[in-house]
Image (cartoon, rainbow, N blue to C red; front, side, top):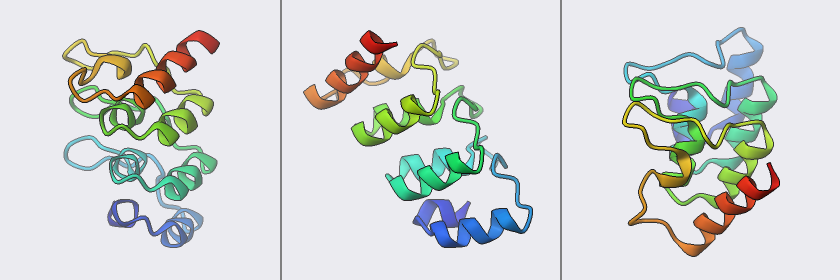
Length: 121
């Protein structure tokens, strides 16, 4: 988890090659993919996806990595996760979707990215 939090994708590669579980969860149910997404570590997210990280895995609150990317206004990660098969219409335990997690924080870029994804899919 610490390697994902700090964006140490080379360490992640070594751990995964040694048999580490790419979808291991911490006490909040977050996976390395979610932690890397929260910290905007794009290269780390790419590596985790290449190693078959589950893009629609949820934490204890029902949040996915895509919801987190949208919440933190990380449009490049929203696009990457979407392109990797993340479902934009999935809801967390509060009933919120990635496109509506925090409407007060949405910027035009974030809204446009999610809107474009919805149109294309």
